[in-house]
Amino acid sequence: MRTVSSALAVARIAPAHAARALSLSAGARAKHTLPDLPYAYDALEPAISKSIMELHHKKHHQTYVTGLNAAEESLAKLQAASDVKGLIELQAALRFNGGGHM
Image: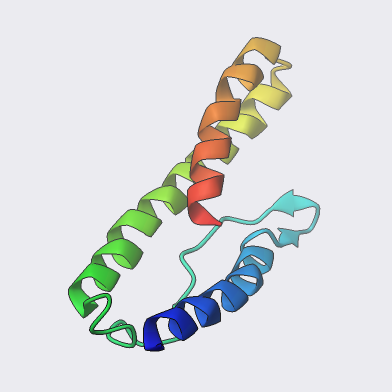
């Protein structure tokens, strides 16, 4: 079953991307970036088309990365201002975008 083995391969690769995305630089969070896929966009055809993979990776996943970076910038500002209420309100954006990216 090609689709099952392909899905398992992707699941094994994902933690490596997560670790790279969470890397720290000089004690401060590095900007998250959209990782390259370790396979071609058409590698999962016919189960998942190349156009769907491109849409998901380049648009959908990139939106999570952009949102996570924005939320982390807000986090730094709120921490510097000791804005506890703002920090609590920001948790949902961090969880949503971070979870979508990982």
